[in-house]
Length: 400
Picture 1 (cartoon, one colour):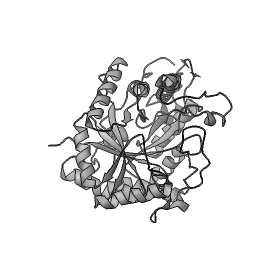
Picture 2: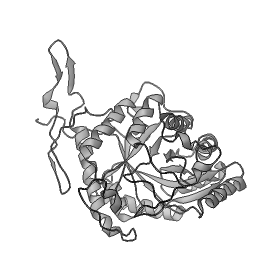
Picture 3: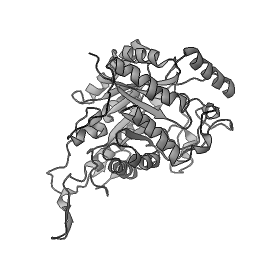
Picture 4: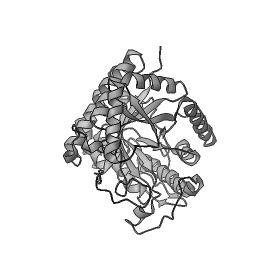
């Protein structure tokens, strides 16, 4: 019997291809509406997916890295990913919701309560994708620091940004733990709403942050919401190994997937987390159709409209859902526990995932046929869906 894999989808506007908004079935006039994102989340849940991620950033989208371009033929502008997730949470029941938060220029105290709130309004299905900002023009939106020009070919130049991100996640986790699970008493007869001895200062003092705590939001339903990160090289692999529950990687084939998994596991062991579960998901951009020629023609048409062939940090798959299912199972054997798929255009490739790929995987006993049901409420949380335990509270039993 096959080992079931985990499956997520990465949502970004009208799709990952920059010309996707011009497709006949796209909904460009609705990109900034709650209904649009609710529909995408419901579709992901129809496909029984583990979770969805929502892209975000601190600057307008741009074709190049830095500075931003002046193109007007591509989608520009976003809604806030955390607020989108909180809005659609009550409209879904099972699928996990993992918005992107840029941890450069923002404060972990604010993010901790926002993601904790998401976990509450989703009944334990919240998470976060942490990302750094190495773009100098994004720093000008805040005026508190400058980011010198950084070459993406020089990963060492990014070390400080990723070390800062690791501290950021540590603060998030400590703040989520700063309330013990039974800190709220809510006893009207005695007039005690909270046990103050079960709220804790975190007293984090590091190179990048000094945070006293406690949080203003009680401990989230999952204890600690899911933390995820995208990584392409050793420095970000190290961040994920130190700080994340799920890391998204970008292999080109099964061989590179195996090598990446080995490096992540080595970094995980070096971080002292060798006994913990760290899921490694491969990212792929997908253009899908029942006829592989139609999928290829659609991508070619989008490339022509964009004026250039679409390229990506992740491998681009163009073909049928059945062909993609074969590829995922092949790569799974390299040590991957799941996949995060980026639909080239929406809705075509999202529905091809939920209504085409998922049935193919189910026929091979490689994916669930229903969300967990029964008396165990933990199974319905995002961490439970991924087989992750509820973290113990590091401050439980400590003196205030």
